[in-house]
Length: 161
Image (cartoon, rainbow, N blue to C red; front, side):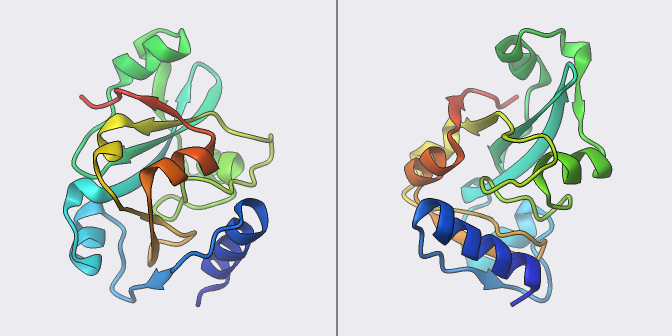
């Protein structure tokens, strides 16, 4: 297993008592469509962790692979103008979470500035199991959305466009 995926899996055990079934796919799971095809689930069951910057604060939005994040809804939740919400760049993503774009897990972030506010797309709560990145673009793990929410200390939110 890749070092970052192994590190994430161990952190999930140490910090949350989870025994994750992390699986690696050499062909990659960079997009929600790739991940869904690799694991054999619906695209909507892919829990994509996206780092956005709202005002000057990075946040993680764990959204369904079938949805796009509404900057307007996130702005309203964060109390900033929609024009002050943007995608985090590669450096901001790594600084906020400790992971690179495409491999950001929904929890166990170890960024430079401490905990990152996290939001969970309410549509993910409709499934028994969702699949999320495990530290690299090739590694994923299945998890119950309620357990994901608890581990991420996430606020469930209507964030879909």
